[in-house]
Amino acid sequence: MELTRSVAVRCDYFDTGRCRSCTLLDQPYPTQLAEKQREVAALLPTPAAGWSAPVASAPAGFRNKAKMVVGGTAAAPTLGILDRDLVGVDLRECRLHTPGLHDALPVLADFITRADLAPYDVAQRRGELKHLLVTESPAGELMVRFVCRSQEPVARLRKHLPWLLERLPVAVATVNLQPDHKAVLEGERELVLTSSSTLAMPLGAVTLHLRPRSFFQTNTAMAVALYAEASAWVAELAPASVWDLYCGVGGFALHLAAPGRAVTGVEISAEAVRSAEHSAAAAGLSDARFVAGDATAYALDAAGDTRPDLVVVNPPRRGIGDQLAGWLEGSGVPHVLYSSCNARTLAADLAAMPSYAPVRGRLLDMFPNTRHYEVLVLLRRR
Image 1 (cartoon, one colour):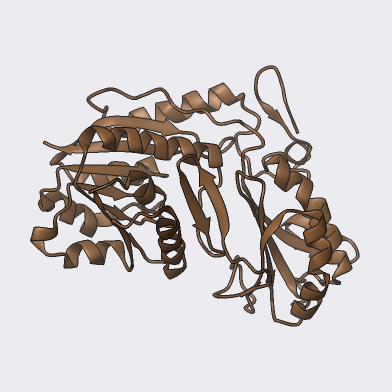
Image 2 (cartoon, one colour; image 1 turned 30 degrees about the vertical axis):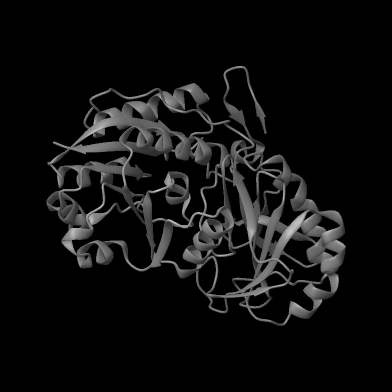
């Protein structure tokens, strides 16, 4: 994969039809970015300050997480995807991954062979190793997760782990157990093989501590830009209290935390909340607290006198939905900061909150070479 003069990405996997995940790969990157901005401007009301210029990503070498289906055999594993016949297609040369991930994948393939980890055969329903999930921090450290059908290979993984630790900067290694024969990336149970169970993700002034099943944006540079933009906008508002709904591992909450500002993060994933609490404690942010629970239920159950000055929402692609939008509409909350990966559901949510008008907005290209992106909008009650 290489960049041409037109800043399009050339990829043999794409050109030969072995992988078509990057649906816009045949378009020059500036064209992709311009089309995304046009789509956002057509779907959403124009902010009072106009749309800020979109934040461009590197079109390659940006992805901090490799989600690889393991195929082939233990002696010759493939790391990538399965084709229509459920045969493994090796994609370890994919240049979307950060250089550190790209260089780690061949070593991990050798480790699979050394530890005699039989890849799971979907058609035959036999074998053990289903997926290899690898995350790289900005410091170059790795979290490596082996998604297995059972605990059968755990002893071999432990035996050969020192070999891997000598060759790669692995901070966290785990076995995730996913026994079911279905298209699910990971299971609920995690066995930690290393002394550490968290991967430190330094993002400027804030360091997030990721646990194995915690979500983090796959484009580190765009995540840094997203949190920096949010911090700058919120600094002008100087809210005394903030709710970060759908807070994940606390990215927005921890970046917005400040002396004398009460910040509450709400997230359905208890694993993510544990990560957020770890990060807050490590940073000495005593005014930041986190709750494991449903974001909508938390807002609906809150007493009226606890209304915050600012609500941050960063929902999944389906948006915040009618209930939470209705609560915000009648809440009297002065400002809402909405981070969305789906401008269509964002538009629907804004239509359900006519008391709010967008004052700032910016697109951040979190997912180059695809039609997806992140858009950040600051809303002010009219």
